Image (tube, one colour):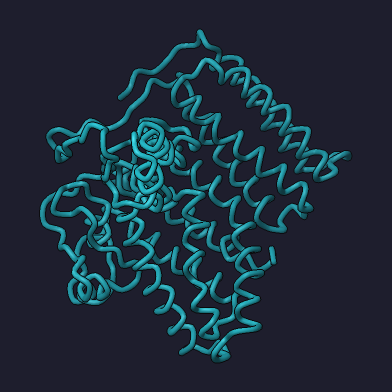
Length: 409
């Protein structure tokens, strides 16, 4: 199953596009990317990839059972059946996406993606772990129709990559193409918190679904990105579960038992009876205050190096690149989450970061050497020890609780 993980092959392509966009921002002096949010987005993406193993297993088992026992037809995969499968995935995802904005518990799963306050390719990577599970609860009709589970999973990954390409401000409107297909302009509208843009343009491949079902809006005024209940943190745990915590607090505070249950399934923005109702004031370019934080000084180079280490760990978890067994992949996933949580500690200058990062460096060094049996001199061993030594020295020079901080830019 791991050999067939489409995300292993899409990851380097996505990173290539990210690097191109960053280079273009530098060349043309565009402020489409902020360093702290970019690191948080990338970290959230790496953590999100660790659940793909579980999602793939669920797809193959559950969808496989439906396909083996209850399929109506059997589709041989030719060019035309691939197109049909793409259209099927796109149509189902339109409705899943729309429900993700309309039902509280589904918005809790989807909102981490919208909590980014910029628009760039790294925002496309900012998806929640719960949304991965949530999306695949709805694609099972495709198995009943007769599409093999492997191809459903693969097409979902391709469909996600198509959506990735919409997350940029470098591409303007695309003429006739905009009539039928979702474009960056359409998707910028989808991410807008401007009142005319709220809950619009849910299509990922075709925009015709929005035009057919009344959820289309054209990009006119400048788009303001973000959400109305921002997590105000770079921590991937907080980003992933912020609105679940909000709903839990509503449920606990609700005076009526029925409201404690239905708050999870009511439209986004609904509040239980007896709780103060909150007026939603439109966020505009004039009044938006983007989240910024005080971070440790001299952290930029360190975090760039750790981004590379994070990709290395992620590939060990989701692919056969390092030939890790199942137990090692689970432990590797834990190390990866520890890794990206510590990034937020650097970006927010947390006092706990110094001890946590020292422990993580030592633990990761030991684990990578043991998992890969690096007991003899080799290029990989030298690289692992070198990066670990750099990380240990840098952490103890610059990330102590009393180390200099950088004020929010």
